[in-house]
Length: 134
Image (cartoon, rainbow, N blue to C red; front, side):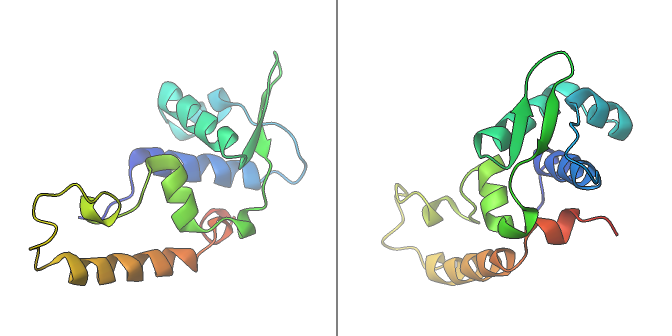
């Protein structure tokens, strides 16, 4: 079943909370974790991924934290998912052709069409569409 992972869910919650701030003030992992009952360690690692991808900026120090670095309207959900979880595909053969049945597989092409359709759908949704406050 296609399902968003907890790591993706927590990243979306964090970005949504950061996006609600009108100024460029910092938001700490501790603050997000406590306010949303999210495991601190997992959120901290997820925020580090987002910082490496330059979606957020990490500011170190006793009053450090994170703030948005990239405009959420410019980030497509396919890209976001792949930053957090790696290549997006229903079947391993979509991004890894080491399958023993790759040449005789009767479902690879139809599944690839489904996968391409889902990727296209997520490429038409920006991070902002998901995280902006209602």
